[in-house]
Image 1: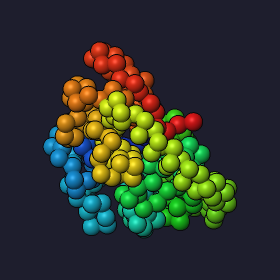
Image 2 (image 1 turned 135 degrees about the vertical axis):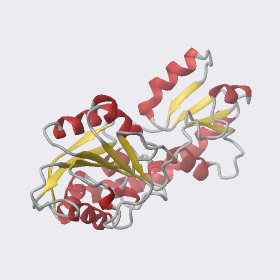
Image 3 (image 1 turned 30 degrees about the horizontal axis):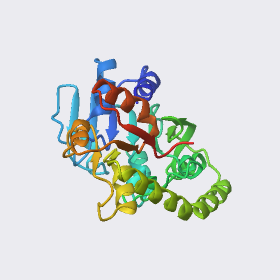
Length: 292
């Protein structure tokens, strides 16, 4: 995330104006931007945000649309959307709304981050398909969606160990391919293996539950995994999460419950979790549930 924050600031360095984040949550990304660029002002839009505004970081607790866009008054240097468009039933309409608020000769950039369908399918990460996501994008389809909205894509990179797409676009016309044929083959190949994978995962849960089993990650992946594979909560004793908003989140509590095996929902955090549990002297058996 720090690399993306640095990218936004570097690409906006020569431009005047505020940096907007749409779907800012509790302002974590805005804080990263603000620490590095204390001279900037930042505006976050999110109706669910509980974060208080400060002198340089203003939170608008509302959806961003043509009516509320004027609250981002003054010049805009950049617009950031991190994990927003996959939640929208009409993502192109939303991108068009953003484009409509920008002048035709706007020199800034729109930065878009979203999960990549290729990684999910290549790694058979079945629990990355869940109800809160209306859309999944490839490099080609993300570029196409941006182009339909009048945003010319200059780059689409893989970030977060290839799990996410990070696109940079600007006002303009740069038609993209209509269809990504390769993803169809990937989807068909993955679908043919999902049933057998689910059977193996159920067997793994059965084997590990005998010594006490927990799932690390009580976000979308963990909740989807537990709901699909242990709907009656008879084999997974608990879910662990460092998010302070999650109930009974502490690793120590899981150990007291008799948990000895932990399934880690996102392998990107495996080493971090291992260091954390070693510091606490909790010898969990950790197993990643995704990745190659």
